[in-house]
Amino acid sequence: MYFNETVQIEIEYKKKALAAERRHLEEERQKLKKDKRDFDRYRKLERQKLDQSRRLFDNKWRILEEETRKLANERIKVEQQKAFYEQVKRTLTEIDDHKIIEGDMFFIGVNNAGSLKRRYRDLLKIYHPDNIGGDTYTIQEINREYDCLKQRFA
Image 1 (tube, rainbow, N blue to C red):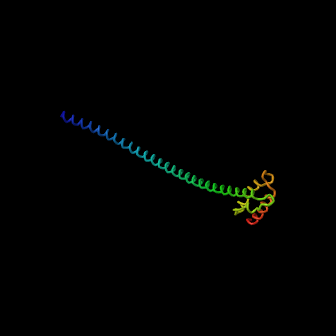
Image 2 (tube, rainbow, N blue to C red):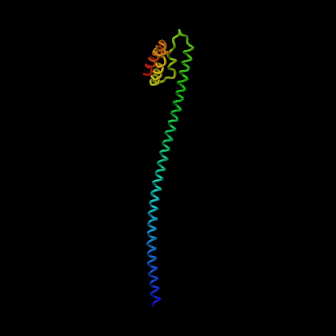
Image 3 (spheres, one colour):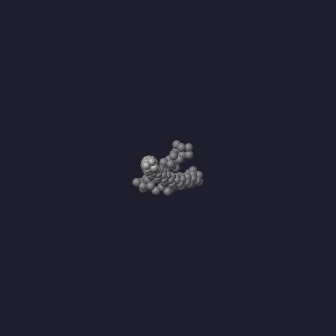
């Protein structure tokens, strides 16, 4: 009888140990499940952040490319205006003091009312008689041509 009792005690002890280990394993399994859910959420958030960063970068890059194109176009326009005014300056130095400059040469390349107005303002800044290099005859010719072109574009 002593042997049976000892075996039963050992069996009960092992059952309790197995039950405790089962509880421990179940707790570990639940903890791993929770950790996996947390990791999946974290990974999803990080992907969303990465996607958002990529979209932001792409938008910034697109804007940068557009602005670079605009700057290149503006540079071309400035170079054209510079060439035009250099041509005007060369023409003015070649003209006799007794001849009146023809106003149409000042408005070469003007094809709408907005560019006409801008060119007229620029010319007034340069040739107005109150300025150091200003000339009354030249400004009169510019005004005459401006009035004609203004009527044509209106």
